[in-house]
Length: 306
Image (cartoon, rainbow, N blue to C red; front, top):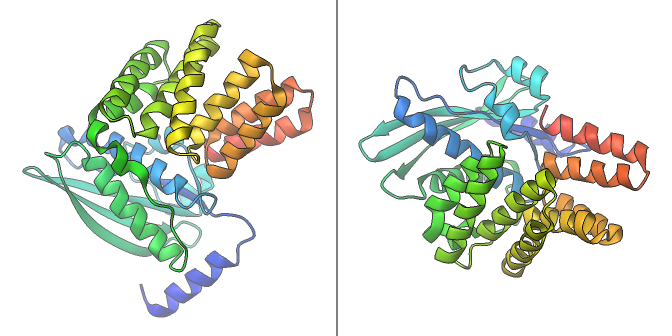
């Protein structure tokens, strides 16, 4: 990319009145089927890291919407039309023995211009290979887009010791089934025992328990979710997933609407890209009779995860 093109891109980026919409697409794997699961795990972690640091700078499209492009690499116009994305991160994965190579490209979808490309590597023998690739790429994205910003520290290092059960739990949770939530809750709990400092293990457990409770009305699950969310927030007061889970406990268990709204708003401040948090806010607003605001929240959720 020429210096002039980069200058034009930077000016357009900073003069926006709202955060840009950012889509991460599943990386291509070529003819290597063994990389399909790696691709899914990397997508989860990239969306998490780009969406959570620094909070509010980018609105990141949800995983389900991104996965519709898993079978093909779309044009920038297609991504723009379907996901309403301004910027797209896509790429390809290649295995060389135990070494994983990721070649990523950042595209301005409005102008169909490649802004920058990067090649990063990780050791597949390390259980945290997806975290390592995502950390490198998310850091490079924010160094380019926000060179003068103070980036929030990545707390994933505190989860390195329990990364395998944590990653498997997230994969099961993403299925959105009762069995997936049950098995993921057990794996998140296992991860929290292995590495008690890992706030993401506790918040993931809280999310799965809330999802189960909302399916079957078991209030005991909500109490377990409360404890797990509180443990997550003790370790990381900015954990948006924990705030969202705790808000659900206050809403559906305690009927404390004021505290539920406070926590949901704090969660959305910490992670504005969380479509499920906008959905939960819509449920709260409908319950409290604020229908016009609820419609606006639903529209935000759909925009983030069409």
